[in-house]
Amino acid sequence: MEKRRAIYPGSFDPVTLGHLDLIKRALLIFDEIIVAVAVNTEKKTLFSLEERTKFVKKAVHGLSGVRVESMVGLTVDYAKSKKAHSIVRGLRATSDFEYEFQMALTNRKLSKRVDTVFLMPSESFFYLSSRLIKEIAAFRGDISDYVPRFVVKEIRQRLREINHADFQMV
Image (tube, rainbow, N blue to C red; front, side, top):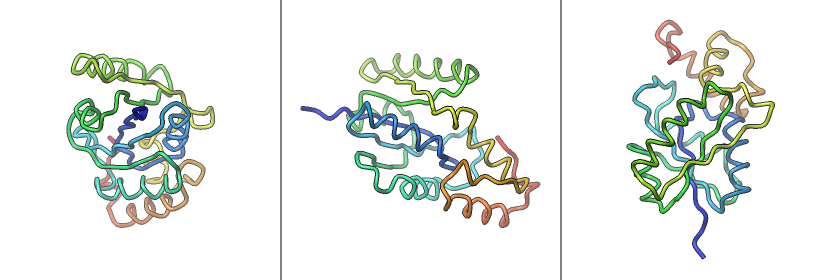
């Protein structure tokens, strides 16, 4: 029997406890989750694609059925190349819905074989976003409840390396 495989794409800049929550929820539905760390040309990232991929790999270490890869290009094409029939996306609030709905319909138009599955995060992560975490960190706020412990250190180090004025949230 063919494995039920799904792609969970995102920029993961940085990977959050909300992302990990969604991965664990997706594992209840799918046999295998491929976390696809993607290039998003509309986002200015704090970390490189290689760094983000390394962080996600470290964050999911020990989770059976999870693979992490970097991805460039259309998610639907990547899903087809990995023989995945589903794309997992998180929906936090109604503000996410319009964008995610548009993407899901566009992906369905590009490939009828790949469908999108929306998952809700746990209530404790409902408001969480990578953008918000970076903003809190930029102003020296405590982000330890939102990201894996090692990510806190990586963000603090990166923010020390760059001039805060050069770092704009996108």
